Length: 601
Image 1: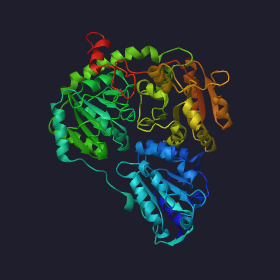
Image 2: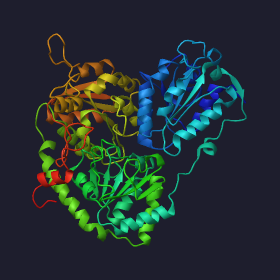
Image 3: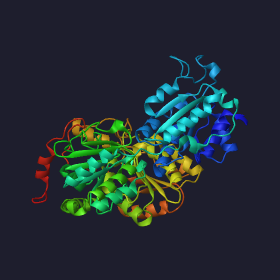
Image 4: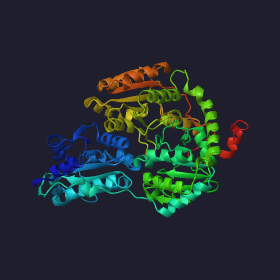
């Protein structure tokens, strides 16, 4: 069969089951765009910028967590370079996608042709992105371009998933090649996930048998393994409490009696206490970074807590805490094997019952502490009230609603005040936390979880950076609701700067001549982009607005006036440092004694 390289690649993607291809038109990718739109069944999604296409593919993967991923098409020069921040975001969040990047004609390489990245060598764009994706390759021959794409596709979806990129010059895209048939994706990409070392499982089971206060900690790696059912089975069978990282929210139903919520500086109080008091931590697909450990001051590893760390990627094991058992394996398979082993050595939930009761007491105390914040009648609206209302609305109407949290001030509220009821909750704080991620990602999430609404919570600063992406939802009638938290400032930055310096800078939108606070009209912006919109200033209007938007089947923007003076939430037992790069202001155990009611330890 004779066909062009571009058509052969698109036919392979179609045979692999790819349903979504997103991107922008540019002179470096015409052959691919033409083949997708006119010679395939793949749905093409035209985005407002290349980075929005990558974020869309990221959100799509996070709802599915299985092949096929979405594909992104970009063009030469600035079009390719536009993907860099979004690509880094997806890479560090382990979101699979395939990016097909355009390039100028290969016969013009090193001549400095229009938009070539050339000064230190011929077309070096792939060198730019190698640190921020799993694999980046420049195709240099028509007869090998297809097999390079097949390998890149396989790399994206196997092991620890992530974005891969293949750059294909314009002339090679159009070159005719002779192929016997389109490669069978199953033959080339079906790789069974890694199982655990039996000796490591045996040792983990023995540690659990000796433990009195074990705690499971699920991260986003549990999501990628689709290990939700087996995690719940492990917890229920043996009575082991479960916490999550912020990125792992939704790994277990937040209302499950064994769930302690998000363990995070802005997470639940009982989750924080359980982390401090556990004698064995079983971390599954979780990273320990400065943000979720209070600069590595939370967990008492190895002094008082032993660590079992399971991850598909050995690079994350024993990175910041030494592990008693460091186990390279797919999270789901590892937990399945652990359940078998624990049954064999007759571990029973009665062993951990006193520990579970203690955590329930802590939970009751913490819920009493935050009850008034969740029901706040303050105007402008408080972050806590908004997230509590959203949480309740989703639980009552459709627990499988796609819920996305952008970055910024809402990260100081979402871990505590939003209770996930399904796995379709995802956040943007695993690593890069790019502002504006949810504007494109929510569209991908809606496409990846069809039949359910999608809602993204985003700050006004993030919307200003990437708000044009919502136009894509209008063009393709994708049912996404963006809740824009308008406090007219970069709240998380302002609060921290005022603590450190006694003043802030470059945080508030102000008219220089008058010093007056200023804000765009996000309702008018949304309406100008074809999106229905509404402004909300009172807490009692939140749920009616959510009902109108999420049940409409159309894209919406809800602009909510948020109190700029509201301090970010930290759980009541957290000693906050003056600077984020310094240790806590006092030992957490001393802090506990100072703030907890007598007899509650």
